Image (cartoon, rainbow over all chains, first blue to last red; front, side, top):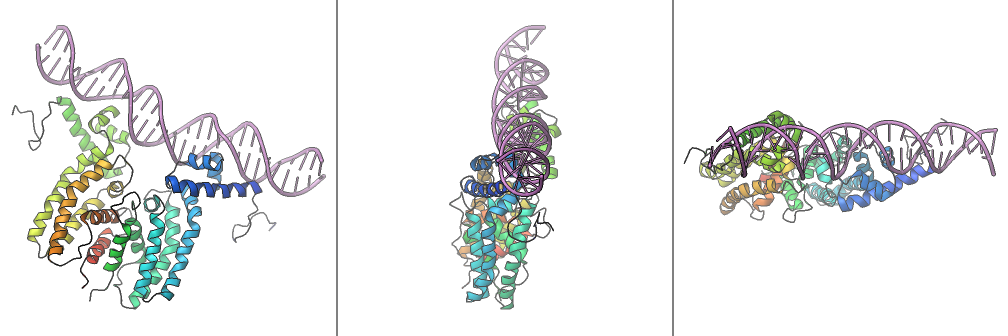
Length: 196
Length: 196
DNA sequence: AACGATACGGAACACGGTTCCGTTTGGCAA
DNA sequence: TTGCCAAACGGAACCGTGTTCCGTATCGTT
């Protein structure tokens, strides 16, 4: 294998040192710009913040989706891992579901514009879409199944639809004080309850 | 009088005949393009479809929001007027609310991209936002109040928030067969029910 | 028929995404 | 240490789209 490329595992890629440094710099810059200008910030702004050229940004993150994923990966992972934990520590599966969804909502509403881009049908965000879904839908499904098995909720709604619905409800939740996404999401979760 | 006015007797501005004709042509063209390419279609496409120049489109409809409003005004009016009618003809206020919301959802999901643009925080769509809200929130409020007065639902959710929530749930409902906005909205309305 | 107001068309500009290529640099081997 | 070259870099250039502006054409009236 001549140690030239380790795509599979974690660990140090055999990239050049300056490349690795630039990637880190870009991540920091992007995170910072996303906070102040939202995830739609012009590529040039991010490049400027990082002090690199445009080519560099596109080389490391071919699409905006790649950059967004890289910036928020840790938080998404944390959210995913919180699912089973909440299931174990909560009084009921339905309560766990509610708390987990709250975690997700908190994440989305504090990332200016992320919810919107997450559900844009614009091709090019497909990978972003796919990443969130792959990572979180199974967790949501687990919570949903547990609650259904406990007889707390109706079982005719899939995890995918629920995630999309919750994500959609978060769109524009920042930038509008009259709109409280958390409340709407609570209502949605409440609507899941068995009515019999 | 003086047969210059038309269109439901509303304003008959002393515009030139060709200007009025072009406005009509543009509305038809826009409606047609919106159906095939969505409300984000390039301005040039609409101008081309209408066979007019770019200046003409901007003169008649300074912002995209103006054009969208003009194209869908009739349907929004119809939806608004259906509110009181449903309240009168339905078994319960809550049923009327459900049916009315369904009307709104049907409208939104069949207009490619409209729901998204309706809730974009992008300034420039402010007037679109305002138009929908001004016209529909009062109707929704009336239904909500009736249902609350009948003791069918909790009364701690405003019409504004409900409309935003429903609108948000409709985003991307076309272009994704796995996502059924109507079902989610039903759930939301179900969540409004008094639990005691 | 002539004339002024009104409206028109589209060139030109602004802006952001994306590509491409000449130049620089890190890491390795001699 | 030096020399080499693939890797990585920077940013000019290009493209598509929104928006403005102004010379020209047309309408409707005198």
